[in-house]
Length: 104
Image (tube, rainbow, N blue to C red; front, side, top):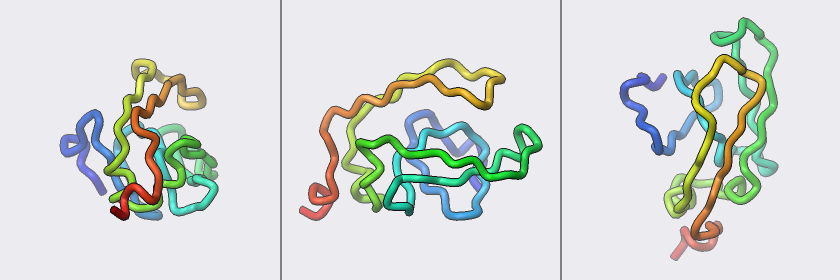
């Protein structure tokens, strides 16, 4: 498990299946080819059912840490709030990453 003081805004974090994490995050990629991730929010809202979230279309194909390391972008989002069911944000990518760019 990550310790909240170790995570800084802008960090790209690798979360393994079943691992807990103590922060809001934007999903850039997952092990699923469709970019889907099932997340349990029981520590936040008491619900034990998994919620399906999807990575951003432009980064979901980045299946390795090396390919995500090539991404140059900016995430703009709303300030933290109590609404767990809604997120308003914008992901702007400046260099259109691809799997091939990480293999050079």
